[in-house]
Amino acid sequence: MNTESITSNLSHHHHINPSSWVLLAALFLSSLSFSLSDPRITEAGLYCGTTKAPLKANYIPSFTKEMESLSQLVTNHNWGTHFVNTSGSPIPIYGFAQCFNDLSNTDCLLCYAASRTKIPRCLPSVSARIYLDGCFLRYDNYSFYAEVSDPLRDTVNCTSQHGTVVDETERLELEESVGRVVETVTNKALAKGGGFAVGEVEGVYALAQCWNTIGSDGCRECLRKAGKEVRGCLPKRDGRALNAGCYFRYSTNKFYNEDGDADGKNGEYVLFHFKQGFKFRSLSRFPRDL
Image (cartoon, rainbow, N blue to C red; front, side, top):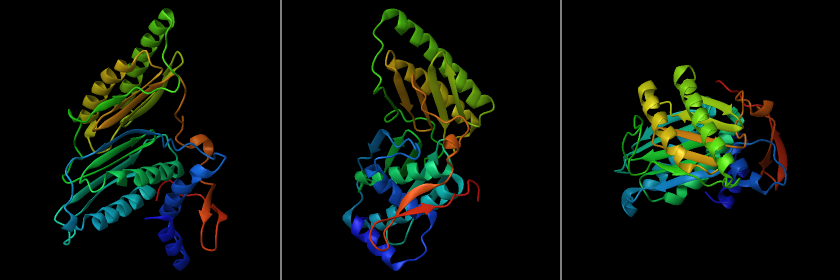
């Protein structure tokens, strides 16, 4: 959907649901010179499948319908799975989206909207997955929800804006701290965190997030694997493990929220209203649980 179609649609509808406003926000908030929150929309990884939908498969309308359904689920629950198989398309679409547990509902919606605008770059591929630093989105032509790992596509991202530790003493200290925080956060996520945990050890911060669909055993397997993989980023100051069933990150800079409320900002966001040109509109608080 381009800008012209967005503005056209808005001019004909007076009532727009919150998820639609958030999608608009993701498209245009990047042009603002100020920041009201941190939905962590940095792209950590994008994978596009090699199988393409035939031109006559009517795939794009089915894809759009799937993304809209996921958008409503994320609006209500911060995550969701959905399946669509329309009569006009021979290719089923299984979708999954999940925000990390420390994001507020509003930041979650912004993160999902950003992933939703990026993942169409893979079309007409019948499968794709995108990892942002605050959420995950995937679609495929089979039910993948219980997948813990993917030997072909699981990867690490060791890109670090904070550089690499060069000093030998500091490097050894970083290695020790990363090892300890990985173990601490993993154990916390598995013991009582419901597949999610954050933590800090000697100035190294970490976040572990399992997808809600893989179960406790799958989460254990995925995080143990991710913990080993992410250590391979040392002596970089940042590292991410991007697996089929989970995400793990460490950094020497704190990047997560402690209480899942994005520093208390759970709603007041300046979004765009296009009904008659560009106007600012304050969107009231979204409920976290509907």
